[in-house]
Image 1: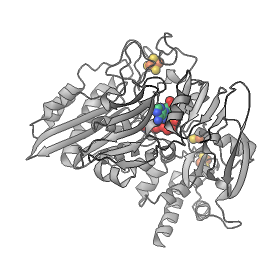
Image 2: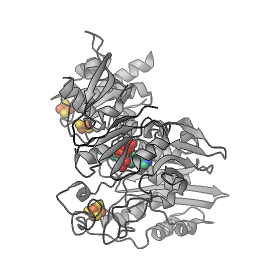
Image 3: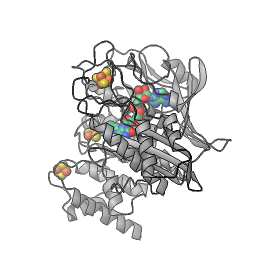
Image 4: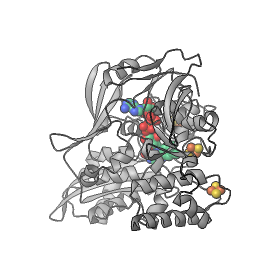
Length: 169
Length: 337
Ligand SMILES: Cc1cc2nc3c(=O)[nH]c(=O)nc-3n(C[C@H](O)[C@H](O)[C@H](O)COP(=O)(O)OP(=O)(O)OC[C@H]3O[C@@H](n4cnc5c(N)ncnc54)[C@H](O)[C@@H]3O)c2cc1C
Ligand code: SF4
Ligand code: FES
Ligand code: FES
């Protein structure tokens, strides 16, 4: 089968990959050392996804890849060729906020807001996983998202509210 | 990050051909490799992306064991119904590590091959024999709170950071490997190594060798087990000391005991002769304490990490108690009972 190969390490040659980003199929030239985070922010102008630490230590860069939450700062874009990406910009349904977004507002679940896109994508991933059932579960399963403002209590409340509504359905 | 050439093979033989010459790194989830490349600790000339290889499955082995594909993610492994039911110790150890996001990207092959979190290894302005052979060791005489108390050498006192590997050691897993010279199976105890004079060598993989799977034997520990991880904050932190314990108890007596330690050595630490101290004993504090001393015999601190010696012994006693009582440590409610 075909192997994508690039043999000249000194030359900055790019590889064209396909990504579906927030529902839109995009063909994008990327240099192999570009992270998914940098591609989203710098190349695609999707600056909702934040760069906190760039080392997997804070969760600000969390996006959904094929429905699963990951840290986009530690993912090479080229290796995600063919994937479906959802960023915070893609959570809402047109003008209607995602239930998590509404719950974050209702519960005052942020102060500066820098960690919020990552918190929202992470919480969306948590709901899809279907593993969390209690407050302790939510706390543990949101532990990959650091909030320097310390809005944790309200974040937990917001996520728990949506979780409970979804399970009641 | 340095510039590198990139290949994305779709079959294993091709990957090994691509991976064999020189300064090549296999890329799986990237959660460790990409991080180290950003720090210029890893500077591969070529990156071979193995994510398209058919190594994603978890499958039953004919002998009753379970094969974990090298590319199955840590999350998919921990939450696999067969792993949860037959190897809850492994499931628990994986869930004790990293974060949900990281576990979604991290793979089983990448987890056991992740490199040390030694601060000096990460800091290219300081000496480190693991990063730059012959340059010295910044941690000896430096800040070494997270470093090894067992099996260290004058060249390196780093620890292996994986939680998953500690459970795999306790469960006597086997690492399936393929490389330029063909396939081989490496018992988990022989996979990682102690630093000795060759600090740069984390494990016994030969250049170009690729982990294809990790096999779990049929022997299961479903009643008496625990993974107890002690760290500076309750989640999203590496272990200072961790203990994977598994027991078989018949008629009130221990007939089989497995104890592996994390955070204390260059590899998951197991002393089989020390485990046998428990054989034939009824579960008791004194029996556990004797085992704890036998397992940590020769432990040496380097200053900041002296506390780990006492902590490890207490953790072993506590973990054996949890295992004996059939009350494994919860990875959600972190209170240590
Ligand atoms: C902030 C943070 C916190 C963390 N906390 C924990 C923790 O508490 N506990 C814990 O256990 N881990 C923790 N981790 C580490 C994490 O578990 C590892 O980074 C992950 O398991 C590596 O898997 P990967 O697939 O992403 O590997 P990669 O980054 O792709 O690769 C890692 C190494 O393994 C090699 N490799 C990968 N696959 C193979 C293969 N099949 N054959 C041969 N070589 C291979 C690569 O070449 C590379 O050298 C943490 C990581 C971060 C960033
Ligand atoms: S302990 Fe090992 S990894 Fe850390 S500085 Fe010393 S040689 Fe390097
Ligand atoms: S920016 Fe990715 S985890 Fe901090
Ligand atoms: S709201 Fe400021 S970092 Fe979380």
